[in-house]
Length: 91
Image (cartoon, rainbow, N blue to C red; front, side, top):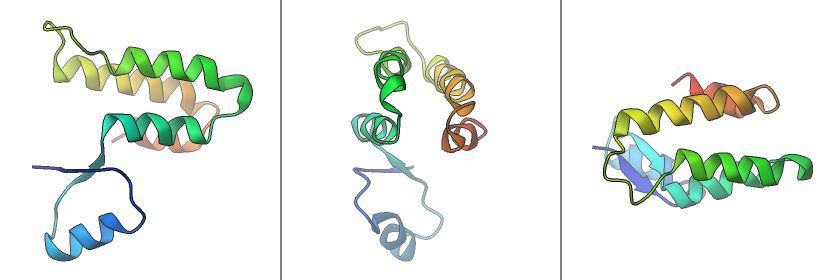
């Protein structure tokens, strides 16, 4: 089971020290903030809209698989401009 974190600096190291092999992931809000933090001003608005599409809420027909597919598509699109998204989409 992954541990969800807010991205506090060094938290992943501490979690892995005490719980070896644990998967650490950012919560959706912090992932969105972290993604937009590095976006160029001309990309921010479009990227924010794309992120809203990735993190759909209040849709009972949505599935984890669909969400993962939307994330991968987001990473392919923005990976052309930002290497860190290209890497994340391949995981």
